[in-house]
Length: 112
Image (cartoon, rainbow, N blue to C red; front, side, top):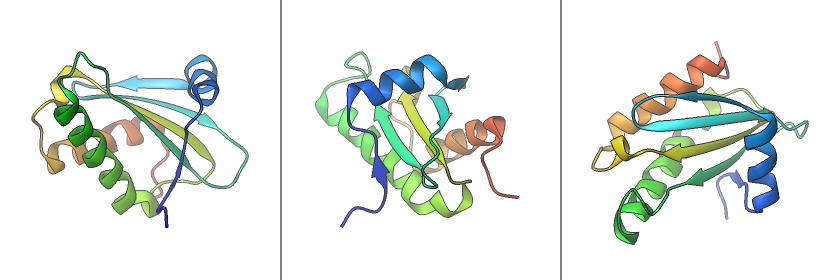
């Protein structure tokens, strides 16, 4: 059973890119857009520029785990797209979690 809803279609990603808001730090880029569904949906994008498939899939798994373990700390009703940047390569869980929450706080989607 899936632990979260995900964005899968390229049209969903494009809609978030076009109409959403973005914030950036050294490791990640986060786009958010309200979705009117009452639940969050997560999309993760890791470019081939980051590294080979092993590196890309590891980053994807770590970002997914950061979201899974902390989804109850986020407000509901958002489409969230996280893009890994070159600075994320080789980072551990703690660094990526810190980076994720830095961006979530900038977007003001963290519950008080």
